[in-house]
Image (cartoon, rainbow, N blue to C red; front, top):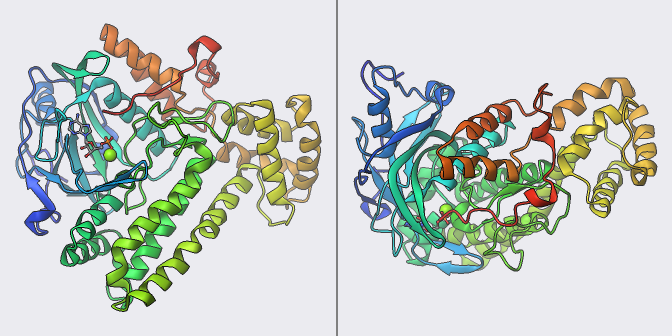
Length: 487
Ligand code: AMP
Ligand code: MG
């Protein structure tokens, strides 16, 4: 807990790394910070104390106008593969680490401003964020958390009273305070590896192990074990994205954490109708980051991480490559274990049967052929099992097979209802709803739809009387073609 009058008890393990890991830079104040949202639950969890602060003081901290006591703002250096091409220097161009706190569970968490002004990594950017993407990240990252998926969190969103210039004209600005297990990315490893800075890679790997994988600290083979541990967490994460119909949209290596949390909610979205080719980003013309490609990109990104660790895995390069390659070849099987387990759960299956994989795959095939809504089809299964609801005729043959399979579950069909409700969410942050709430905020300064959507998404597995409309897929004219690019 923070002591009286202190915003948070900051400490700084990343700042203790060599100076070439970051640039110390203060935030740049904005004209008129005003609080849009503050996440009191999260604040409580991480020991952030606002009780001694007026709303204006709190907004000033959340906007970066006031640097809270004990903070040590810095921009982290990183590189990354963007759409397959290597960029040796990216870095925090519009984000600043405020400091680290230790939460109620003893976990160290980063607090970061996003949109708090230029840094040495800004390149041609202005260091700012538009309000729309700030609200999108707030909504989607908190929705992810409510789904119990590993994700960065949103502590606050403010408006700045300033405009930022973007491709389609001036837009109201915003600043987000993001909370993450850490902001270490695959691209952070690539930054040092690309410079031939093996000491840097080793220091980063040791820091990552201490922070995220402390059980590996004394392992004589710890760098290989680190790779496998990251591969495991990321495989589990991407499998869970698939199970909720989530498309990240920009799975560049700088947007993939080594902690296994989802990070960077730019052109991301939850699918409405099921189609593995779905992608929402207008910059992703070839569909590199389409829903169905995410498992392949997971492996591709992990290969980039493995490359950075080779000299640490074995002094003999041939041997290091051999081990890393073998481990990488195991990624699809690793992913598939998580994928199948999750999709079996969505069908209410607990005991294992060989027919399960086909049952899972065949439902997806019918959904694809019928352009069925991903979320609502799964959510209906509890009622289908109870014989209360029928799916369209095209699902009939599948439904018969599935009900026959459920009858072989230990408690029979009757026992599956609760499991099905728990495994199949009712409310996702549908893209047209997000756009609608952003539009109201940006065009009219009306934050009502944003707060209403946020409240509905807080309990996504529970049916909420009066909120049926949040479950409705978009009408043709409500359909969102592209989402914010994030910059
Ligand atoms: P993102 O697309 O948000 O993952 O960002 C990719 C890279 O571009 C990162 O290095 C960001 O810091 C940088 N960047 C994005 N937007 C801006 C901006 N408005 N000003 C400066 N840098 C930016
Ligand atoms: Mg990014």
